[in-house]
Length: 465
Image (cartoon, rainbow, N blue to C red; front, side, top):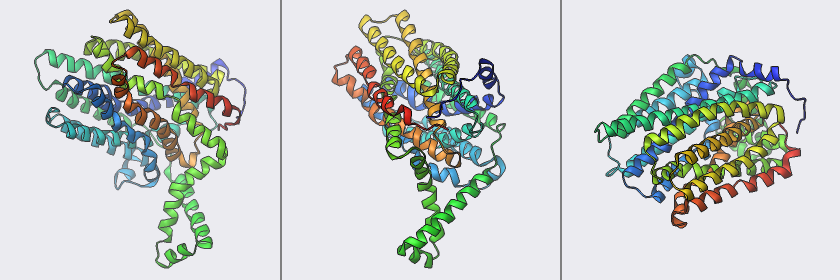
């Protein structure tokens, strides 16, 4: 791990007032907004249609696609979209294509009744998740490429602003979604969720208009690096593999080399930089770190609903109030990360996440209380803000700039794997505990401990750019 001086306060402040942070803020919002659709909105929609906690929890398996987007990240990193890439740029063309697909899915949702079309509803949610996970590949790459690799203070500041953007898209989008659905329901509309989804599609259109003002770096240089690696793979395979010589005679050797360098190159680069054992330790830490937070998050709106809070209550306390605290403490978390270092910030954030999860146990045992509810939500958002800033900065500094999209997608998806595949059983866990929410939240607090133990053993051997 490279140790350097602590940046001066003025240097930190200047990093936040960098004009590039506005672009990163928008990119974060674009990334966070789809989680409103397949997270809180879909969960409440299904809950109000009478589905069980277990069913809603398992429906959350659609989030698992975020854990596997690295499988097609190399293709998105290299394949150009006809016409759009030339007119808009490589990264932006992929984002706008995926956003258009999400809008189409929202229109489809607005036309169906979940009581008779549950499978279709989940299928559309899966398509939204795939589109969102795919756009995240290029959103994260475009964000990282706004900042040079040697600008560590700016990278940490950018990570915190990206988190502010993500939570703004998620929290404000959730507030808009829940408030509008509540208003339409009270106004007598039976299809209030379907109308809400149409309005959310309009918000995505606005995001796309803002995206047009973000410039992206020249893709030609990266493409030349990729082509060079293609040729290197082709030479190695040709000299060492008789089967490849056969392919060469069939005139498809260049394609095999392209596939090899596209998929294998980013992985080899990561393991070569960190060493095999440390690389595995990093991947294990990333997988485990935010599992407890994911278990809590997956069931949170269901818990609030069962505690007797209305959609407007959830929107105000969990979304609006949570957004304000998240904004403030994400920026403070970024400053803390810059001054104290990423590794120390990860330890502090992990411990804080565990403590704040216990507050929800107190709410469950006490009963409906707006005071406890607001305290729990505020402190949980503070913990999540600190954790996400440190986590995003950590991953951002691990990537090789020649494979920005692929390596970031790989690392982020491994973290998502823990939060999606395992957390899909959160509803079943609550049912197994006979609805004992207090014990459930205690268990989520304990889940962070293994990752912190692992981080302790590898912290001095991690190489950050």
